[in-house]
Length: 194
Image 1 (tube, rainbow, N blue to C red):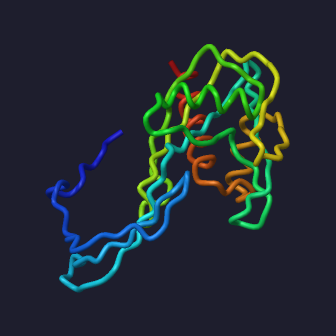
Image 2 (image 1 turned 90 degrees about the horizontal axis):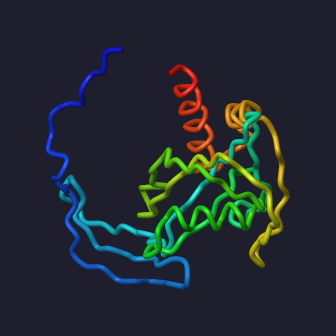
């Protein structure tokens, strides 16, 4: 396979200039900042940035038979039901793997003996600086679920291939879940070729 390199340019050059910055709102999870800026074309404007106080964490658990688990819940901001991989947030100062292990146990009751980080992503880089990580969890064993007070969860065990088809059919639309399931499928397929 032949890869084409990107065009030559200075990736460290920032064409934006921040003139002033003010926190407009914050709570335990987010901070909303409004910056007065000069944009790359030299025009004045504002830029709103949502800073997350947690890292986004997603887990694709896969058992020896090729099954995975999805978590279903009603998402308040969307005003609709959403099927997703197990996920949540981990405080920025904590190890992301520890937080991912906790999230998997809380939401599914599963523990894993093998963890592979398969993705680093930015969830919506035009409005937030949120950084996310997705792990492939294998060597699974079942325990008790312990969802948070804000979570009314339904678990669905299904073949990974079926979960990927739900992504392709736009039935799974959460960005972390889409990236995680597609990357997990690719990682597992490349392992099978070795």
